[in-house]
Length: 155
Ligand SMILES: [Zn+2]
Image (spheres, rainbow, N blue to C red):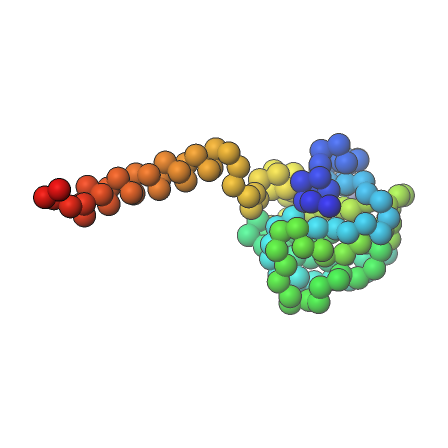
């Protein structure tokens, strides 16, 4: 399961701000399926929160501290270990305050939960077509410059 297909828009069952109090985005998924990390970082915490997140894990990354909730059990990687985007961080469950198997994704900046949706789509994407063209143009310019500066002058 890739990050993009796991956290696809059509898997969303609740958005940030829903019910007035929902401070994350819910993604429906089958019980026991692997949860991939949205952004690489360090496993910074884990616990069990009966009234809210159930089994949860936090990953501290560039965008903030990600929280993944309602897992089947504790995190797979140990606290302190590094994970990359797409690495397995736990399995889908319905622990805590959940009515069906799903992942609650939250993003903490300081003490505030912010809407994680923009960061879910926008972080650490592999190069796409447009990026590739930029790289080709940049490499070509460098190569032309190099030829002009260092090319044989008496050829
Ligand atoms: Zn939720």
